[in-house]
Image (cartoon, rainbow, N blue to C red; front, side, top):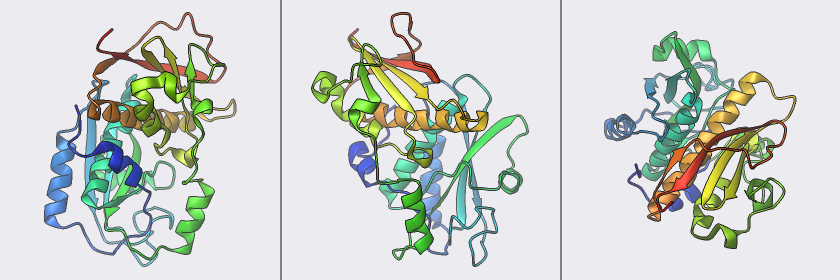
Length: 281
């Protein structure tokens, strides 16, 4: 389902915020945000749960266990899901839609997957024992004056850099780059995917266009640890959110489903996830 905001405009406007005014969300903003979260869905058919917590932080912003990465935030949203085939991709998809909506509201957010104390947030958000709890985000009012550490963090994670098209998008196989002209009406949705955030800006998505169908893959290095692979699956869900929502905004309908990969030689450390099949097929 298309989220009710200008998607392309909001994607271009979104940026990670790590320094906030030290005040809670207004009752109106909190109600709007959580009501939007309650109505979200994902194309994988998974049930994603959102959890809101509001507590004061100390002067260093570390009381809720963000290791000094976040300053001033008093409100956080967490996300949990069952450990299923597409659970983590669904988390990435729905949580990114919520983050885009928060951006549209003028609120600041930032994905946190490895830089928060899970034990503290598990307790505070009352996450069920049998659920995965992969990510949180502060949500609040950005402080105009950013800290030095925030500038350093943006540089370290290469926040303002994105890989070029020829490294991400391919035609029929993984050796033939897909041009924007060949992408046709899907050039903008693919560009919105290219702009999606990911952990340390790794951009672990690869897309192969085969005929009219777009196959989505997750890629990682041979040394990637299992928990890091989980984060990359979330990142892919974020990218799919951008692609899907931008497609819907342009009136391009279709469905996500598993497709045969017999004709495509998949590189090492690359995993096929799902395919986008345009409605006209």
